[in-house]
Length: 438
Image (cartoon, one colour):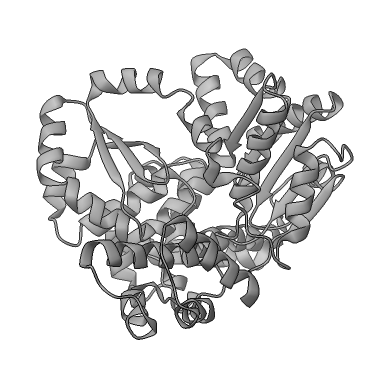
């Protein structure tokens, strides 16, 4: 999952399995996701009346949906319009506080063969020992600890230099900030926010690829920071040279520092992660139980930790015994082969829209702007390629467009693929983002 909006879209999809479309539209059409932390989702609605209804009827189903997604219990907070402004003012630095927590330090990061170089580089940067590691570029698949290292760098630099201005931002949030600054005429404030940072941390930088205005602004931001000798750290799901829609001048700058990869953990590292998480949560696991988890969850640190959290929940709520025999039943629903992953149309539409700085509603609606039409056609093409929906089914996802419209869209995309090598890379990039949900 790439953003809070992605999470909320998936929550609504899960709710839709038990609620009618009328109920979803009535109570959640103007419900917005405000904040997502490791244990809390904050939502906002326009009126206190709607807040009361959602709190009374839907809080538990929302919690259940979050538990399905994260294998962990979440608090759900609903704010009305008046409460939202106060919450924003009171929580302006809340995310920074989470980054400063003991959960995301170098001490809590389990080091193994798959990540020790990235860990060592991050520690060197945080301690100011390696000025030539600028920028530091850490890449790897989702759930392997890239964001943890960003938080750990921030935590250590804040400890050593409390006077430093530290900026953390996700790639898609940087784009959204830029759009808002242009719309509200606050370009100067936008640049001041990013260009005077002593430490600049950007998570998921791949999301600025393919966005010319964002890349231009980021290029200038990067140069300002770099020339001032201020440390820059990026994370991404792929190395710079594989981001085909990224401007060459940015690729060159990213590769001018240190590029390091985090790989899936080996068996020994997985065992260490399991023991570490179990100790944190006060859970005693036998060697056999730990071995079962390590053998069956091989590619994702987040999933390994999720399995341990689920065992804790089972122990606390069911008062059940955790042993080698019961553990497979408890975590059975977490077993998932990525090759069997089939994305939903909503995920595909969301990712196609996001790639072109649009919304899902734009693609489903009647806009005929060039970018919207292209993104809509591409979404139809990928739904056809990645799922088993019929052409008629695909039309229903876009305000009941007819069979002929879908066929025309598929043909146009196929023609572009045949003529334009760069467009092939766009499809690979979007498909990679879609598969990150697996």
